[in-house]
Amino acid sequence: MKGIHIGMVTAACVMAGTLAHAEDRPGFRDTPILPGGKWHVHDPDRPAPAVVTPAATPGGAPSDAIVLFDGTSLDAWHGERGPWLLEQGAMTIPSRAQSGGENNLISKQEFGDVQLHLEFRSPNPPQKSSQDRGNSGIWFMQRYEVQILDSYQNATYADGTVGAVYGWKPPLVNPSRPPGEWQSYDIVFERPHFAPDGSLARPAYVTVLLNGVLVQNHQAMLGTTIWRKVAQYEAHGDKAPIQLQDHNSPVSFRNIWVRPLPEDAIAQDLKGATR
Image (cartoon, rainbow, N blue to C red; front, side, top):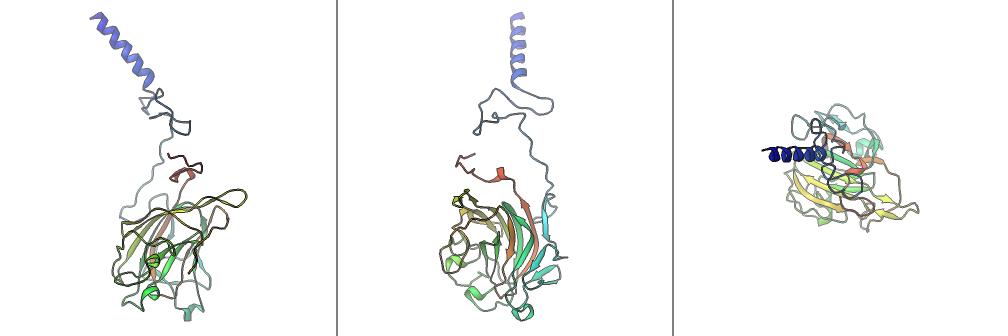
């Protein structure tokens, strides 16, 4: 019995040395070091994630979000030629006759890596066809476009349909709702990185869910979006505004919020080491 007791005490001592801070944050310090050379597997000293309160309803802004449009004010934006129309909790692209020409809407705040939620509605009944039907777009850093289009039973070129990285990658599927119904985008955009000489060190990436359906899966972008040409990168700063495109169609928007993402939230570091 004495030998059993000593063995139990020895085992308990070993566990006490291995299991650290069990009273407040359990973990281990005798485990291997993870890639990056800083943390043990199950390290008790690794900082805990910040607590974020989710919205009470699906699609609502979580507690750490920056609300860019809540249906009551356009204060977070400025139009190239003036404000967009605001009524009944939505903002709508004005006609060219009203605005005097192309009138893209630009966020006053600048962003780099970001999570964005946005809801949009194409006009009903449908107007025109192909690229002239419910056309708009989300331009991250005013350069990299994820397409908005009324793509419900509307034939157009594949890399220009809703959910496309415009001019490059068609969406994986087309989960469009009929015109006149609200649709949702949830997008994670990772900015490009440039070397000191201006060359591209890491492209921009985008992950896109349209109406809750994955349509772009960590897709690399080719560069600044351009019509009828292959996109190319030009070096720029780490942050720039988000732009909503005026493509001469009265598309409406509501419930727009973003979460700026920390550098360690990106899927892969610049050295290419998978985490």
